[in-house]
Amino acid sequence: MSQSPSMNRSIVLQSRPHGAPTDANFSLQESAMPVPQDGQMLLRTLYLSLDPYMRGRMSDAASYAAPVALGATMIGATVARVETSRHPDFSVGELVLGFNGWQDYALSDGTGLRKLAGLAHPSSALGVLGMPGFTAYMGLLDIGQPQAGETVVVAAASGAVGSVVGQIAKLKGCRVVGVAGGAEKCRYVVEELGFDACIDHRSPDFAAQLGAACAKGIDVYFENVGGAVFDAVLPLLNARARVPLCGMIADYNATGLPAGPDRLRVLTRALLTKRIKMQGFIIFDDYGDRYGEFFAQMSQWLSAGKIKFREDIVDGLENAPQAFIGLLEGKNFGKLVIRVGAD
Ligand code: NDP
Image (cartoon, rainbow, N blue to C red; front, side):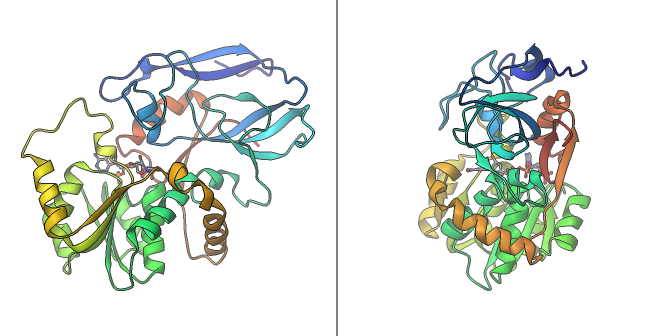
């Protein structure tokens, strides 16, 4: 379907997935281009962020945020340009961070928009300088409280959050062990990002390799994944370890509880006897007022070359469903972003 300037394309939630999402859960629709009224502007999406939390919004199970309604446009953060403006504070051509969802164009009255000026990479507002980077920063530093010389482990280590967690932990003087899927991601994590080691969670002897890489145990485990990775981490946690509970992507497509031993008893016994602190957080709910602090520090680290980042940019709004399905299977390599329109 070709894009016409008189039409807007959006991807809507067609049906709720049972297990892994499929193409059939999404539908690409065309509608007349919205026209801004007084006090509004028309935004043209350049980049759309795809993030694991969107799987939760496709479901109507109770959670911390309301689900996307059937037939509604999928939600998501966007970097956009002001195409036409009838808003006194926004001019045509300005770059803004907003939440326009999976579509080419959107109307806005300015609520919740942040102007982006002077960014070398506009898409980084969705990744290293945006929600995922902020999540890494607050979860690691505020909950993880890493101390120099301690061992920090993070899974999904080549991804948007994990890559930043590990690099900040290195800046704090920790030994950092990543967990990632496959040799290429592990090589990147060690050679490009500077982690001390990275273990492939798909290796048959993953647990033994992780134990060998964490000879002094684990002091901070930044939890992005859950599942088999957490099973291998738990016995390695040291007394008074901290576990920022950020995400459990291994379970997002699960349709029931995993088979096997009573994990809750194993976990609670470990929490008690080792006096482990495990704390969940939802980044903007818990830390929204500290975004400025993060942005200033991360900008400084980036310009000093102390933090590196990698984006996995997929062209075309129509490819968003497949890219999102792949995100939940580890097919992305770096922060997943859809380039919706040319700048
Ligand atoms: P990533 O860019 O890291 O992409 C997701 C990665 O998860 C995949 O590439 C894959 O990496 C890994 N993965 C998927 N399934 C499994 C599995 N079964 N076992 C192990 N790893 C798996 O995503 P983000 O950095 O954006 O998000 C990371 C986590 O942080 C997610 O759980 C997300 O929900 C959470 N999050 C939480 C926030 C909060 O406020 N609490 C805010 C932002 C993110 P690999 O191939 O290496 O296995």
